[in-house]
Length: 491
Image (cartoon, rainbow, N blue to C red):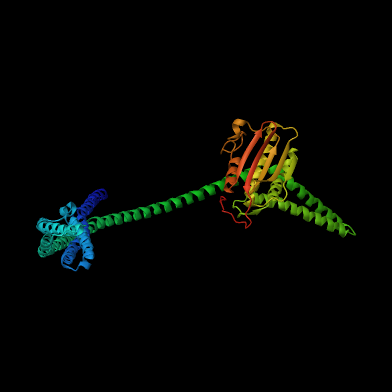
């Protein structure tokens, strides 16, 4: 049976159980509650019937004392007779009213009707006797006859009242027994219903839920397995992407070094030429009869300085084109600018570019790969130099600046007064393979934006053609503990 069919069957059983429960409640209201309500009035009714017996005896005693007692006791006896008669009549009315009659059976009604003549005879005789004494009539025969009626009818009245009380008690016991039996029947039906609910509804429902939980567990395990597999695939794709990106970045740096080859050769020729001159001077000085050792030492110191300068240039170029990325570190923004300008310094001088460096003081360090930061700046500066060359810009001027941007960002800006970027091209300059140069690869700015995104920063451009073009490279400042979520791409 399918889960849907099992659910429909359970729904039908549940509705049947609700119907049985509703029928049980209705049976309780119809069969039990009326008898319980009558039982609530049976005890007071039986008490009233028992009180009638006592009141009839009080009335008979007061009537006897009123007629045959001493004259001094007659006023009290008259009051007693009046009170007993009033209470006796009131109790009899309660026994005979319509509501009481409607709740009683035929046997009780017959006993009550058989009691009525005796009650009326005693009542009428007691009324006449009391009225005669109240009026002060001197009619002893009449009063004696009334007393005889009261005393003569009382025993039969008491006997029939006892029988009526017994019938009331019997009816009450019958109702109690009926309530007990119906209560047991309803209790049995309730227990049977609960057992049926447990056996036919709850147990199958638990089985269905257990199977559904098992199915969900298997589905969850399958989904988790797929998620893990997908995660591994994404991680592998991410590694391949980072490796490819590092290859592109390396190609970009190598291409940049190739474009700067003549400038780098010029930069290296200066310290190498100085080294040759200082070495030649030392040899000449040492060949003399009395060499000036101080002059030789000074020349050697200059030679060492030129050698170290050439070594620094070679080291910077080697670090710049290195294939393996450096681990992230806290980097001084001013140091990034200085290293980039040292690589391009010869090219700037050879092209006659006026350089202005505007570094904001007390900037926080930035966290990341310093070579990648340097690559972005080198690429931006090279773009400006190439734009100057294509447009033959008179008085080319380049401004490299840093500043704090917002609370936690540092901004590097490269601004030039070259030809600028057309508005239609401004939104495309960061697309891969898009270049305004016929011989350009179109990867430099795309790689730069990727590096910025990997450092949780951004790279943006703004341009007023013929006036100014500015590229802004923003990266978050390093946290105080120099620990960040490492989003850098790796090769």
